[in-house]
Structure formats: structure tokens, C-alpha cells
Length: 109
Image 1: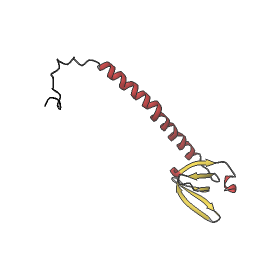
Image 2: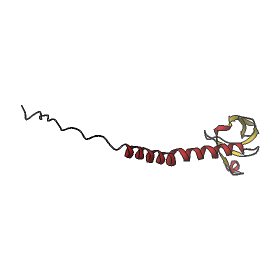
Image 3: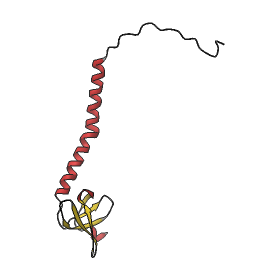
Image 4: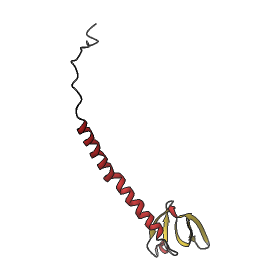
């Protein structure tokens, strides 16, 4: 029956685990890569979005996160009155504004 199951053999004593410095160095390099590839760009995008939200003014043409295009009719502390068609105004959160469009974009849409 030895041809179906291989025999188990005991190994010698394991070598002492060194390499603590290498492990810390590898973790440090991994964290640095994560910081520069993921964390830092996300913080930069959030800062740019916050600056864009703060610079909104009446008459700006914007696109919301849901894809609605409109012209700002009024600004509040956390909401924007958005004119999307003649005599049609909706209220959206400032955080929902995805981007500011160049002037005159709505005439072509």
C-alpha cells in the first residue's frame, strides 16, 4: 500500500527566524507605494472638488453626479437651485455637483 500514500519523514530542526528588519522594510515600502498610488491622489481630488464647490456662483452651468445639466439660479449653504429648463428649477446638494461647464454649453444641449 505504500504506492498510494507517500511515507512521511521528519525534518531536522527549523532554522531560527531572523529577517525582522527585512519584513519591516518591506512593509514600509508597501505603505509608501500605497500612499503615493492611492491615498495622495484621492486627497488631491477631494481638495479640488471642495475648491470647485466653494467657487460656485449664480449663473454657472454645471453637471450633477446623476448627469443633470443646468444653470445655477440660487445658492444656499448646502443646496443649489438648478434651472434645468424654462420655468423648471430643482434643488440639489452642493456635493452632487460633478463639474462646472464652460459658459454657453446649455444652449447646445
